[in-house]
Structure formats: C-alpha cells, structure tokens
Image: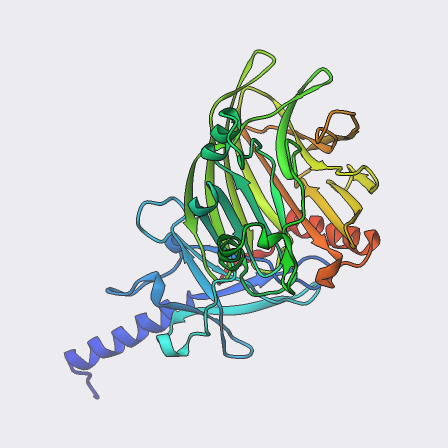
Length: 392
C-alpha cells in the first residue's frame, strides 16, 4: 500500500486550504437593472476579505476574472481608527448581467497606475476654504475665519454655509492649480484659460446642496463650518467631515455635521448629514438670476435647475434616494441670494442622505436640460438599486 509521509501530508493540506481560501475570494457583482453600469463604487468590508498571516488589505488587488485585468482599487479607513476597513473598486457590468472578480494578493508592479483624481483638502492660504473634486466636477465651502472677517467688517470674508461649484472642464485635478494661480494673481481663477473657472456666485444662497430648516415661510440656515477632517483621497473616492456650530431655527436648536464624499466619474457629491432639532430639512439650489428652468420630480426623487450661465449653460441638481423626498418648492423672493429651489427631505434617525452636483455645458457632457435630466433619471435608478455583491 502506498503511504504519504507526514511532511508531504502537511504540504497537501496547506495547498488544499490555500485553494479553499482562494475560492472564497471570488465575488460576483450583479446588475439587476436594464441599463449598463459603470462609475459606481463597490465597497468591500475588510472583515469579508480573507488575509493570510502577515498580509494586509493593501496587498490585495481586484482582478476581473474574464479579462484577468487588475482593476484600480482604493483602501479606506472610514472610521479613522488607524486601520483600513474598506476596499473600493468600480466594476463595469452590462444590463441585467453579472461579473466575477477575484480578491488576491497582487505585487505592486502588477497594479495599475493610481492617479489621485478624487481629492480634497483644507485651504488656509485662501482664508479657510475646504475644497474637493474628482475628474468631472469641483466644489468648495467656507470656514470660520472667512465668517469672522465678515462679522468684523474685514474685506475678503465670506459668510455662507452654501456649497460653491467650481466649473472645471478637464479630467485632471485643478484645485491646487487654481489656488496657486490665485495666489500669484488675485482673482486669476475667475478667468478660464482652458481648464474652467470659478464664476458661480453663492452668497447666502444654498449654492449646490446647502441645507436650511423652514419654519412657516422663513428659511433658517447655519453659518460657516467650524471644524473639518479629511477622511480619504485617492483614485476612486475622496471623503471628509465638516462640523457646524449649533444654530437657531425660530427657537429650535439645530445640530449639524456633514459627511461628504465624491467618487470618480460622478457629477454628484454624496451628503450624509447628521442633524438634530428637526424632522425634515430643505436642501437647496440657488436660482441666481431666476432665468432658468426648474424640474421637480418627486416620484423619481430629484430636483434640477437648468440656467443660462455667462456664455454657457449650467445644470444643478439634488437627488434624494429611497423615497425620502417629501416635496419640493421653488422659493422666489426679492431678498438677494435667498431664492432657491428646495427639496424637502425627511430626517430618519437623526440623519439625511442626498446627492448634489452640477453639469456644465462647456465641459461637453451635458448640452441641454434634457440631457442633464436624463443623467439624473439614470442616477436615481442606480442609487435606489445598488449593485449586488455576493461572496461565492
């Protein structure tokens, strides 16, 4: 009778269990919609990834089994405890289809080049903005120094919790370039030299996605953010936190903290707002010169505004997932910058989730109100029907 030595048996068991572990690293991503899916980020918890002794999540690559191609991925420490807890990647899947991916150790030279398209930072050199961008769009909002300058009648301050749109029209990062340009020549980022410009006025308006609380016919808003924290930047996502001082809405004390993220390929930032003191919030889009056309689609869960903008046109939007948009309203007033198109959103367990962003005609992606709204229709379907991830 043929026998197997003890060392040989250990080798066979090692190979066997490694093969078993390898098999468990196959995941299936399923698209249940009748539209193709791309530029959507799949989140894999690190606790679901089998790691051999001595291996970290940074060693893991995501491999398309059909093409054997290593995809761009990003690890994130979402709870900021010093340990990565999430692996991100973006699959491309046809309508009503599924695709399989392998999570496996990949050498550094096998991984694709990673470009930090999704970027954000605090900007002390321009008073105290916080700015963020991806390959499509860019935004900024304003901090406590800018607020105090206004309160002290110092020129150059900004008093607003509105969200400013930076109209870029290149895929490459522009935040650091534009601020550097503005440092060298004051106001330089208000001129388009081929990559876009800052020509979007916010003032006290809600800009693109600032919140308000409506009491009777009055809208109450917070002031500038007081604290910030960058959570992640990378090829697929940037995310950060903004905290606001408690504010008053007709005697109601409102507490507000925003967690904002922006993924590669998306024209809309995701806002997750922790809010206390109200059971609903109004999220707004500024009306600027009031010469645009609004769309209010409660059934789909979005509002949009398409307007002439200098020598071009611009679409802005709020998307509210999971039927949490109660209603919408176009609020028109003679008070400067207080006219906004609002989505009235339900607060669930102290939290509101929505998406806000824009599409600029000069970026050559959305040429009309119809094309912008078509994008929003598709976007709402996707966020309400996320890709399904199955560990085989």
